[in-house]
Image 1 (cartoon, rainbow, N blue to C red):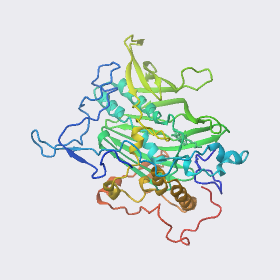
Image 2: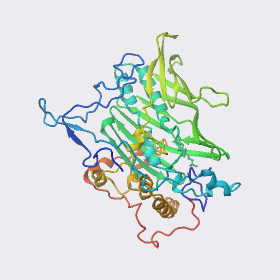
Image 3: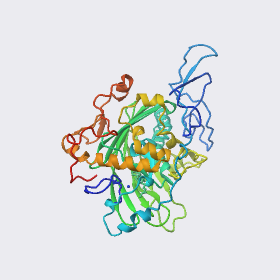
Image 4: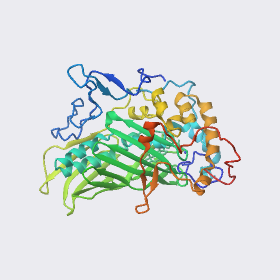
Length: 478
Ligand SMILES: CC(C)CCC[C@@H](C)[C@H]1CC[C@H]2[C@@H]3CC=C4C[C@@H](O)CC[C@]4(C)[C@H]3CC[C@]12C
């Protein structure tokens, strides 16, 4: 495995595991304004007629409890609007260098690839914690799922949950770089009132590398962990996710599923791309469950990236089907009385348009916003937030040499992570449940943020206070 998940290797690098602002958005997190704005996504809205239409500007009733009246009356009412987010990354300070992955690993052919140190140039300016949040770009599907369920439409609820589970893969298309491997105890918060969600994640284990996350939306909670087992096959790497994702609606309905296998292709020659394949069983605790198949890619496949699925009731009767592509869109057909209805299929989900000027990282518009650090936000963050990680910030700014040296410094520091874990280090915000073995959010993050009380949050990105207090064990790999 080429630097993807950690190995217990002694000399491997932390590759283990491998602004210009558009608007003056840094003034305040919130802008007060007197026009009502809508941030809704339309596909799969419960109020929408079942057609392929995609009108994205309807103001929908389930949106934005954050849009509150400030003055409380009349035409001049002032509404609290969400922050304006940036639409592009900063212009790089230095010119981009053309370094091929092959040039980095060619001298290591036949060697253990976990020992190959990749320079920061192969990273994207996003940490794996932030990448977990990318799975929630289409969280409106869960809002719709909640509403459908309340209206008694359990089939549409299940279909929306399935569409959500697939939508998380959309942003992996055409992304050739490796996210930063967070430091032990690194956190990431995402307060997205415009999407009605609040997300939090923490790296809870370094060996094996595990990240736990927790997200609250309108009518639902979603949590899980991100941990992959990887196998290196030479030209490809296979990633098998470990752990279960859980979605719980406020009315008590729960869905659980695991992610499918991801294969990263053309590591050595050709254009690097990833492909997702396997079966995803989304099990519900009430009326319906869904089985999705991400098709295996073959040389003859004229239609790659396909996903197909069926929704079944507890008796095993097929009540709906679903098909589409994980990098494009998904449609469903609801079966009536066991007979496939001839009516046209319904659009459940469609990928957002890519940004107009993509960078070499090929981030989506949503991903571009995730590492933005406004002065106002900076004041509120704990010292462990990914946005404060210096090498990642330098990379984002296109300061490659600074990024590289900071990365080396932090990796040296990180070498004591295993020692810390062995010595009983515990995550600050998550706890492993003794019953189901999963990490659960212990709560209190947003409350601590309110009071700016970050007790127990170490300065993980700074200089080590004293090497004697934290000896770097010679035999510990990262
Ligand atoms: C050698 C270097 C430059 C290769 C770059 C590899 C990139 C494409 C790899 C590195 C880490 C990978 C991610 C690691 C873990 C997961 C979780 C899984 O459930 C979905 C895929 C996803 C999100 C992977 C997508 C591909 C990924 C981003």
